[in-house]
Length: 186
Image 1 (cartoon, one colour):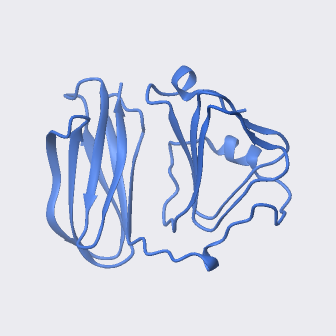
Image 2: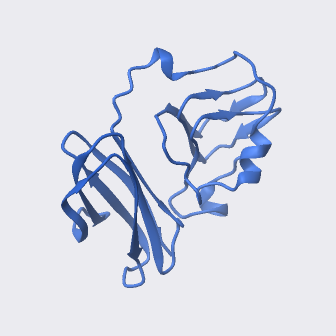
């Protein structure tokens, strides 16, 4: 059962469940009124019979190629409880989609107290910049500027101890796209 994240997890009230390949629900899965959940998987999302969202909830399911699994966004035991028998009901897979995603970015732990790790992946060599903004759009710091990177996965340790409590946007810019993730400072 997915309750409001504001009461149980984080003040922003948005929870992302992410998997490199597949997310599949099992038995009764309910997204309650007032909650906001996003399921993101690299290959497919299977919503079996028993999956239900209540009026007033916000739920999105997205297929994006993933070289990463968001380590701190969900606990592996939660993932294990969602995985069950395979069915073709509501099955989405990337063969029928045009996926032009070249980069991805996320942070963990999130929310953070004193530090977070910014992890990003590139599907090809590129020049990147990474900047942190407050929710008013004011640039707080630049973690990388016009940095050449080969295809791969990269990590940057980011000290959040000097930030005030609240939400921040981490912006990854490549030559062809912009990707963002939110950082919550406790």
